[in-house]
Image (cartoon, rainbow, N blue to C red; front, top):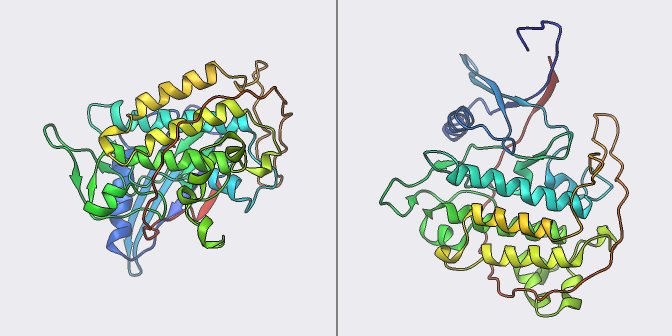
Length: 329
């Protein structure tokens, strides 16, 4: 609450962790430490926190700014949202998340590795700005002269970089791999690993690989819920960026700052920039109403060559937690 105006109210989101369990407490401490020192428009803001002991255990709360338009995963999975994210909104989300990761990796005197970058940890505010959230698994990057951080392998199935799974060696390039997976989520509308699909389609990278050799085949993997309302040229370029992020050798992957620059160029040279009127790309969600999609333009489709070559990723056990309460003060 603003001390200058006692009548002013703000919406908040409260995350309540399990009362028991050392791992949950470690994640709570990590999130407080990370969000207490970072500040960026594409990172969720931590407003406050609370830890209290009683006979039932430790009560641990995190209080965030309320981000009303749910997570990117909610929109792509069609669990709560009927109207699909327009292509222009997906491009904006790709830009915003790249900026957020670039800030964590290179925007401060020290480096933070997200370690659990995924669509459910990307929240959308009332203006459809994407904000990274859930920093419980984040780690400080390696010190000068050290190439990596050695740590237990944790994260979410389908997102973890192969070298991290195999060796436990964590670097910023591990986040870059996860970001590449996320770009294909935006393109296809599919989850990185989905056991409900046919066996040969469960792993998103194994499924898309045969479709990258031909433009007509590539069109077949683009989210069908878009109903053709996308820009093929920018989709191809976005896939090319994803493929660079998914290079098997971590050193061959670009930095997130370089990725952010690539995306800026894609948007600048495409017709999918935000509307010049300044209106939001989509109507904001409210607690009672679902949003309506903004008007989607149809434009001429242009073709460019697609950079080919991605590799599959082994499975990784899931590890995540999410908000328990939304309130207003």
